[in-house]
Image (cartoon, rainbow over all chains, first blue to last red; front, top):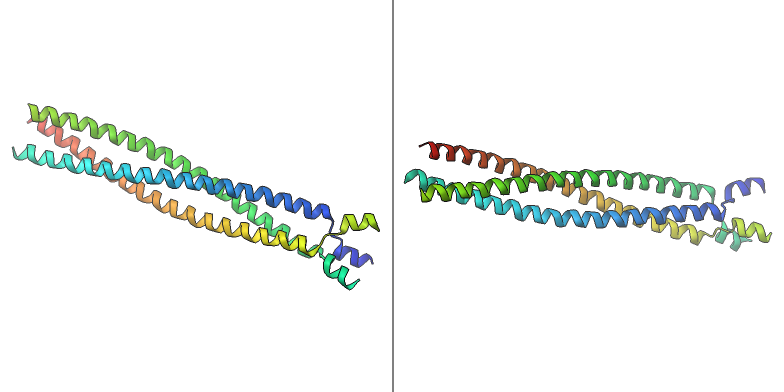
Length: 70
Length: 70
Length: 70
């Protein structure tokens, strides 16, 4: 009986603590998924801005060429 | 008794493995939170640099207008 | 016996549900780690593009100085 209790003596408290700890972990994961989505949205804005800057700089290069050849 | 053992025969080993697995998962989540903070910091630098580039390009456009009207 | 059952009456079903929930959480964490790696790769491209734009804008400033002093 002693051995059986050692082997199978899992208390509700132990399992409840595990369950609460897992719930807390899942909330952190959920929060990270939302934070990740925000970063993905920020990255889309970066891509747009960088492409816009590339176009402006390319257009300015053309102005330079025209000014130099003028 | 057989049925009771099947239903309640949860071993300490099972619960210990779950607990260790949960601890490892929590460490991964902690690591991801730190990595996320680094990305947020990098994004702040990107925003600053992009705004700086926009100002420079806008200033150059003004130089162009003055050179063309000269 | 009643008290013992209340304290140690952990069912296999309870522990199985915890185990499945933990497995699902681990898959979400794994997915987040992959998503994080993609963001890190995107950031490397942003850094390269921003540095490239900085060089172009600096070169254009020199052209301006030469045009103005001409």
